[in-house]
Image (tube, rainbow, N blue to C red; front, side):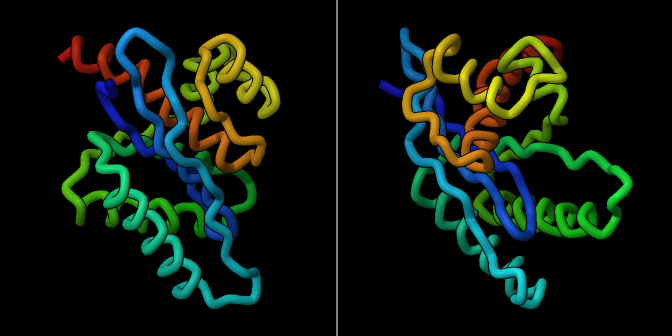
Length: 166
């Protein structure tokens, strides 16, 4: 029934979107699970990263994906926030490596283009296009989890193209 399962991740220290998306033969993708991993603002960063690592590892073991797709960090003016996201991304990469699952990173523009055709699309547009146009079943309303679904769907569309170019 399912051809491939991809775990999509929108990393962050305070909130990380995590989604398992399956590609179905002859139909649109389906969301197997989607959630936001939240860590308390007053919690020490090592403990926040440990919580994230445990959640990602659990998702990978539960869904046994063929790939992990991660939204790549865009460096902006807020370097403090960027450092936290970079550390969260490192934890995700470590969890995938420990489970022997390949990882592909996609920039926010690339994800938006793959899902909406518009690199400047708003979060609401991405969610709407996932549901209405791409016919993804089970898109969550929570923004971080929906972003993780978008990253996984981006991978389902882009990976075959990238493989063909090799």
